[in-house]
Picture 1 (spheres, rainbow, N blue to C red):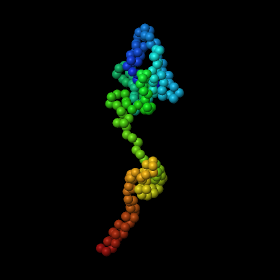
Picture 2: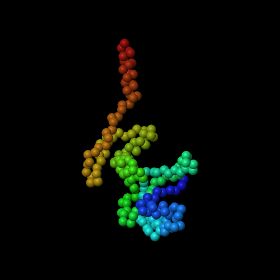
Picture 3: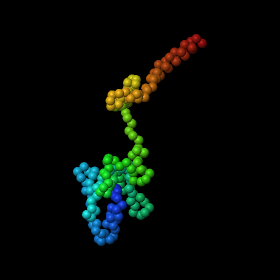
Picture 4: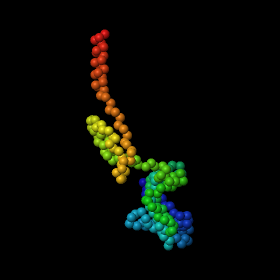
Length: 193
């Protein structure tokens, strides 16, 4: 696979890059194009000619696949793109987070909030308990049956939030004991008849 990235630039910079890449680049005053990042690896500067613009490396909300073709009929996947370099005008503010909340197309607007669900709030004690029980069951044993009402979620202040964990179903009777009782009842009725 190739290494690729998405470069998002303001319209004025896009026109200058297009002129630089066109056939008459020798007549253009913008002869150089440079991108350099600072030590943090997320912010840097984009230079075209003598002008410099601030740039940021942002994570996209999803993976974008890029394809190329040699004969205009068969597409070949060339890369998975998960990051974008966003070049801003000098006065524009830098993004607050390293995750870009929008996708590349209008349907993916605010995709982080609309398309992806939040991670559930789980009680770590309950998770450890369930893990232990699952390991016991997988090893051939039985799970310890305790009332899960003891796992009541609490907020940071230690106050009870009133949320209780899901109730535990009642234990099922042992089927072999039930079969023995039924057989004894049948044998009693056979003798009397």
